[in-house]
Length: 542
View 1 (cartoon, one colour):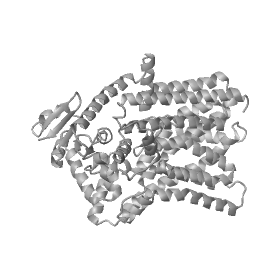
View 2: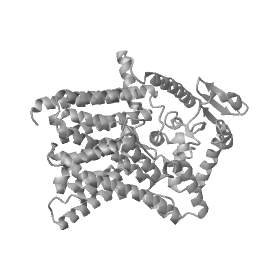
View 3: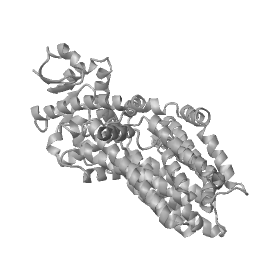
View 4: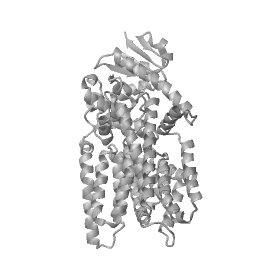
């Protein structure tokens, strides 16, 4: 690169700016969520699993935490545990999430720098990659939308896997190492690792690089071996569970549980896939723009660098791999029903979210072909326009946190301030209730909640009798008896806004945390209200 000192200074400035954004977002999210009181995803599960490992006495009577405190490991939970201050398990996970946000934006900036040379194009790539795109099946592409769940950590590593894959296109002997890296990422997020491994393998398979077919096939065989060794080791417990023989009644119970918990996501798999493709082709024409960018990049006579053309050579293979992954996911789901067993590969359809980053890469690659012909004013205008759009239009939680933190330190009036203040007040009252619950109860006590609040486990450090998310444990564990118990209480909860009262009474649990203070008159015949604030009640059964 020419003028290395100037470029190096620009890169350092960009990385420092990304670091400031990640730290500001973390500070804002921690304040708005009252130090992690509000976790609305699987992150709450990871927080209470760590809490269960460190405080087993608190969950001895919890029907879920007592069984699963040592049963799940991934990189996000491990990193979160390392960064946890005291008993603030959610804070540790959010700190790890801030690191993932930094690595994500920095990774795509560095990848863009390597591919296209221009720091402006690298910044553009980093910004557009952070735009949240909903895919379906309860998933999305992006890192700042909500909680830093494992797919967010994998997204942070994705630019580096791509980087290695593009470099290995010409350095064929490096391909098995790239596939091994993708396989090891199964401990970051298994679905993403499987989809990425398929993309890289297909891209390598369709690019022989002037070697004999025997050598090419041999390298591909080594690639498969390197990828599947860690994958099969990681998934051995899940695959081993397929040997469990279920009676017809138990199978029917678990299938009903699946339909209740996941039917809305996977019941119309092909229709939802079509809707996703249509939305990103017509309403937001990202995929057609990507095809145009690919054609421009591979066409002779245009600009663009050698590395960008290597990326374009990989693009068809990666698309084919994602199509095959989606087809396999759908076919396995259909076949499972016909064979009278539970589906295993339905989640793989979520891997189609990688169509989004691949599309952004090809769009920017197409723009890069014209880049030398553009005047500087147009280049800077493109970057400024995208940055302004992200600032004004982004509604993500982490972006809201960054703006909230900036507003507090500068006194500026910024977007999303009112929403941030509302969430802050709500979560402060919620944390106050959870801390009081911890003070009123003893380790080993179990609490019922009107909304299955996981913070009862990871913040109040008390057992939780029933949660909607707990329904997946008996499904994947093929425990039909526990599934029946969960279904019973879920049916009571679904009777209406006050159905939780019937469920609490049926459970026999002494303690109740309710986020419906308007139900006090309905609760007082059955228990004493020991504490309340504007949003919460703590009740002990008489």
